[in-house]
Image 1 (tube, rainbow, N blue to C red):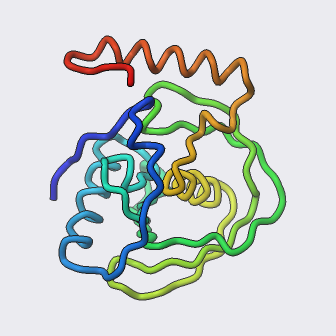
Image 2: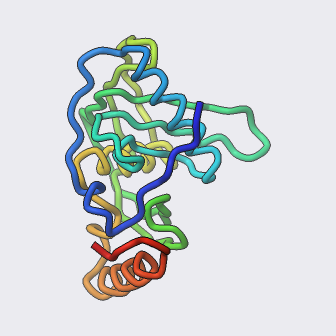
Image 3: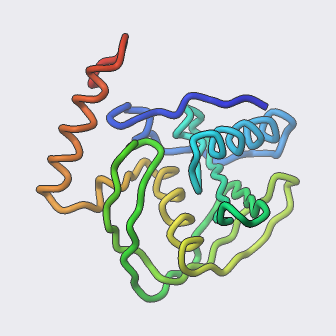
Length: 174
């Protein structure tokens, strides 16, 4: 397992739509392990493959609290098949370090996916898990939390992140 570098906005790879995984191979299983290790090291609640430069439809989520055992969930080729209700949740994102914003999402989702063993499953979720599923699934479609912000907040966050990117050694605010 390896901790991978997490891409930060405005890196254009974050806008790339991910492609479906054809088969759960040893390389895909290794990617899932790297993603989990990267998410835990960050630390975060979820991570999509394209956040580490891998444009495949995979995300990992663990909503367990600090004093709870791991609840790692792996979603390969996820499809949100239904959404119900509305809620507003203060979200952060590993690709937007230091940014927290209230985002409107569905309160309840049903998702179909494949796990890290290649087994299909279906899951109904609400609360933080539902929010995380929607957030990470958006990443796979090239959509980011900044896209759900109002115009003023979007401009402020965009400027902040571009300035941060320009200040990193060897980086450019693409």
